[in-house]
Length: 235
Ligand SMILES: Cc1cc2nc3c(=O)[nH]c(=O)nc-3n(C[C@H](O)[C@H](O)[C@H](O)COP(=O)(O)OP(=O)(O)OC[C@H]3O[C@@H](n4cnc5c(N)ncnc54)[C@H](O)[C@@H]3O)c2cc1C
Figure 1 (cartoon, rainbow, N blue to C red):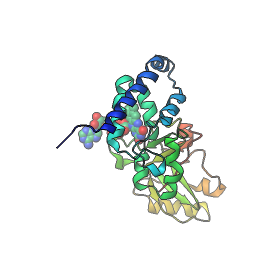
Figure 2: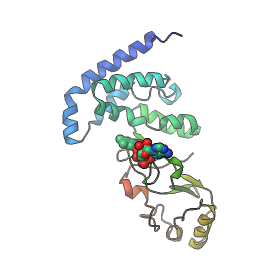
Figure 3: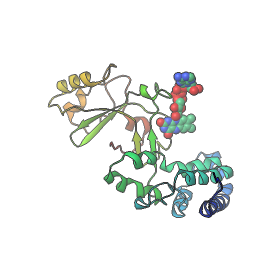
Figure 4: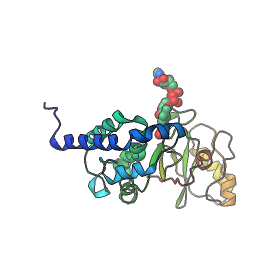
């Protein structure tokens, strides 16, 4: 089997190395010390086509594979890992969107990632669910045209800057109950064994997202992360 890189892949490596050597070294120390980052560098990487190369051309990507994405990662990381991560993690989770999102979601979300218009992240880890992903207890409950997501996520890369986040949540299907009491009992029946959050307050008041869950171990992710720009979507 021939493992040698083709001409296009060699050109990708050269271009990625040139970009990283030109943009990263002068700024890295400043960003490390101030714990900050200049998003213009990410935007420039997007303009030059380094971000999300594995995304299909019809959604604004280059239509390459993950191998080419890895080649770019390798060159960026060799120069400056922190900045490489900042630039290339902006699409984290889009791999799953490509596989499982519906057409409307793909068209709406994916081009924004490669154009440098949006940053995304993926929130799976919870205080009691790390390697054991099946231990996650965040729930997604349908409420008419909206979803109510309750849970606490942690370690979500880009969680504080993301324009949208992909969540891992237990999807619970229930009809919208007319009163709070009915909602609580419906949740209880469908939740798998653990004490369910009580949504009575939310149903009764009709607020779109509860500021905090009345249930002790749950917290609304909006307040937990202060990710005011973030919004959730479910497929
Ligand atoms: C910089 C950084 C960025 C991250 N970004 C994200 C993100 O964007 N989104 C996200 O959802 N999460 C993110 N995470 C979380 C990361 O995926 C979790 O840390 C990881 O899933 C492990 O979970 P944990 O830390 O709770 O460790 P635990 O699951 O508590 O594991 C602790 C230790 O026990 C070991 N262990 C666990 N289970 C077993 C077993 N059954 N048998 C043997 N050994 C075991 C593990 O190998 C590990 O050494 C990030 C973490 C870091 C550090």
